[in-house]
Length: 375
Ligand code: GDD
Ligand code: MG
View 1 (cartoon, helix red, strand yellow):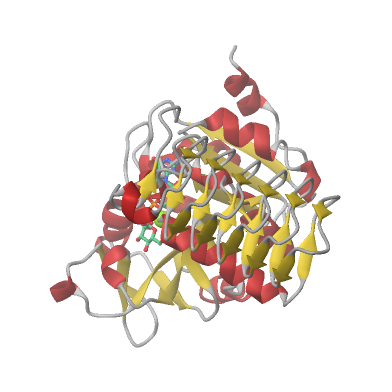
View 2: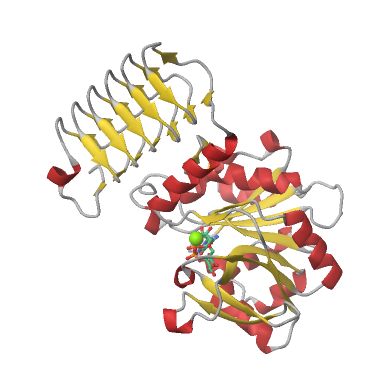
């Protein structure tokens, strides 16, 4: 029996059958648009403020009383399970349901059917939001449709699925990734649903299918009640490196103008640090280094003399040498930027070495992305 099969037969512990105690997170996508950051790490665990992305989502669910979360995994499942464990550190129970081949957003939920009863939340695994989930759940229980879907306004609906509703807020139509001429609203599918279990009968077992272009339109076709929940609040889909950088800087700014340190680091008194800056444990910041926030340093980063870091996110073990300047960049794990480089708007994968004196123009690698041959 494989580890995965063992994970599947762990019985759900007896406990509260209170509604809203369960959620499923879709964590099986390949994260191709987030490359090179996802070359060696699956999207659901990329570090956001030095914690795995999924941790932020889980803590949001814990706040509203979710006790059991099923992670549907497919791409790099072991890395996700090693990082997230059994959920005990969050006071919840985590289950992993593995898809040998990816089953799509709805196929993944069908595959987790044995874990589900009562209405449950479904979350895309790449969304960070302050949408009021408690209120969304209340609305669902008041109206009791088959599905409630959170809707959020965006400036660029063509990157998402637009959702049209009637004057009572009931969903009328979905258009996934519309062209501009098909855009009739700026309200899009926020990737958060509450489903009644009998929706599962509309999903074919063992075969790939998507909520967005198959199951949801099917529910509308047969006249099942489908509620839209337009929501206020911060919402971001961490689909691209630009969004990844933005979410880190936004969340750090929301924490306030401080220097946040996680454990011991050596910060020379002659280093200049302009908050908000998050510094992981075991960093070494030399005299004359300048860090202008918002900026995030992962654990074990080394910032040498007169290096300059601005509005950037550095992953674990990154080394920036003397005189180099890093602006609006994401630098992957253990990458090494040698002396006197100038990088701006660059996304580096893991284990990249940027040679001495490199500037973005000299590098000439569109779209300013460096991928290590090792990834
Ligand atoms: N388990 C599993 N299996 N998960 C999957 C699979 C799969 O086959 N395919 C995708 N996922 C997960 C991804 O990991 C991600 O967390 C979520 O499903 C959504 O997939 P994306 O690839 O990120 O979709 P998208 O961003 O293009 O569009 C979706 O999200 C938008 C909101 O961000 C759609 O639901 C849009 O309608 C929506 O507006
Ligand atoms: Mg997405």
